[in-house]
Structure formats: C-alpha cells, structure tokens
Image (cartoon, rainbow, N blue to C red; front, side, top):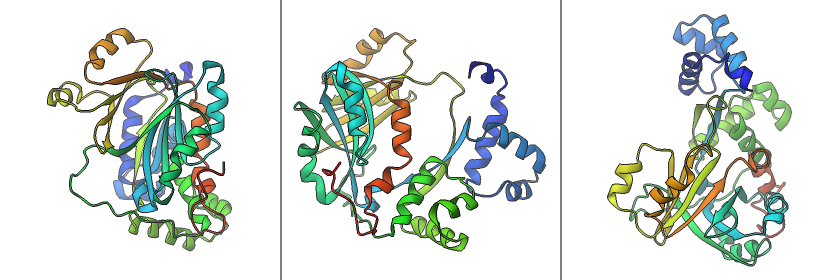
Length: 312
C-alpha cells in the first residue's frame, strides 16, 4: 500500500469524492453529461480510485427499522479476546467490536437491538462475560422532548440483502444487484425508492479512505456531564459523541498510536468518569466482513421480522 500511496493524487481523489457525493448512484456517463466532463477522464479516475480509496455507502435510520442502539463494555481475559470477538460477531445484532483496556479490560461493542427484545440484553451479554455494563445511546445532539416513533421490519427478505449491499457499496452495478437479489431492474429501483421514501435510507455519502495513516486507537469515555468548554476545545477533532439514556455521554476520540497516548489520557481524562483505550486495528477485518451480511442474518428468511438476539 505504501508504494501505491505515492501515486495517489489527493486533488483527483477529492474531486471524485465531491462528484460522487452529488451523484452517488448515477452512472458515470450521466455524471459526465450533467457536469460537462470528458467521460474517458472520469472513467479513468473512477477505475483507478473507486473501491480502493474512494467509497460510497448508504446511511440508514435504524429507528425506522425498529432498532435501538446500545454501547456495551465487557471484561474478557486477554487470551480470549479474539475468540470472544469472533463469537460476538456471529450475532448480527452486534454491530462492531473493539478491544479496550481501562475501566473494563476486554471488549467494547455497539449493539442494534429490536425494541421488543431490549429485556434480553443482559442475557445476551452474559453469554460472553459475567462482568459487563451497557447503555442506551443516541446520536448527539439529541432533540429534547421529541418523541421517537419506532418502526418495524415490514419488508421481504430481499430488502435485508439490499441493505447489506448498499451499506458496503452503494454504487454496486444494477446487473450485480439483479444477480444477487434475483429481482429485475424495475423491481430493484422500486425497492430502493421505497426505502428512501420510508425514511430508512437517509442518503448516500462518498468518503476517502486508505490514503493517510488511519486512526488505530480511540479514547473511550463515559461522562455524566460535559462542560461547555469541552465542545469548544475538542469540536474540530475526530470525536464522536453519543447521548446516553437517561443521562450521560459516550465519548470516543480517535487518534494514531504514533501520538502521545499518555498526554491524551491526561488531557481527555479530566472530562470523564470512566475511560479506556480502544485498539481499532485489531479486529478491523473481522468487523468489515461481519458488516457485509448483518441485515440478512438479522431478518427471518420469510421476511416476517427479526430473529431472536439470543439464538446466535
């Protein structure tokens, strides 16, 4: 990869990503026609960079699917980390797993749980550890006083397959979609349109990856409150904030292992009551493979709803 990076032109990458953000699922020919771009130039750059450095993914509103997000922390012995991670990722309701060391030594997991199965979360987590804690988490900022209406799964099984495909590559060619879904082009176009109109697909976004050194560590923290100066001080950094229910915040600050970890702990630790360091690179491939089939493993093959979170 290091040799390839030398041949990457960042201006070309940014130009292509900007175009694909405007036209995430349009054909290259149509994009060229609309923008007045030479088609062969666009195709040459697309073939060079797309799927390697530039990607387009679908964004989903999981509440419309009747799913609620949770963050969990589990104590796991070091020698069992990979085994437990693989075991957890066999469960499609576990979205992502990261090794952490801090207030819990073990695993940090993101869960998407059907609203009618929330009561089973302790039983689910106890399959992997006898020492765990978990929190309901919402995107920040969360609108106070706004009632959230959860949907439910009310689609055929092919929709689950489609969600998996578009999450990995929203520009998957129509011929490939026809082959994998066993449906005609008009039917697939209708399916995508329906998911958009139902508010499940919120949009598509293009992004650049694999060019600069990736963040391979994260500072994970739980805070009861976050002072105003926190947002002023860290607002421009690579930080993800979640709002915990009924109270608190989940904070994740991404950085490189080449940076001063001790300094970050001192700088960031003053704002949180619980903290740990996440090792993002350890299970990167495991998480990526898991993501590509998650919805199709969550949904019953007759399309009647979600499987039980305890059956995996």
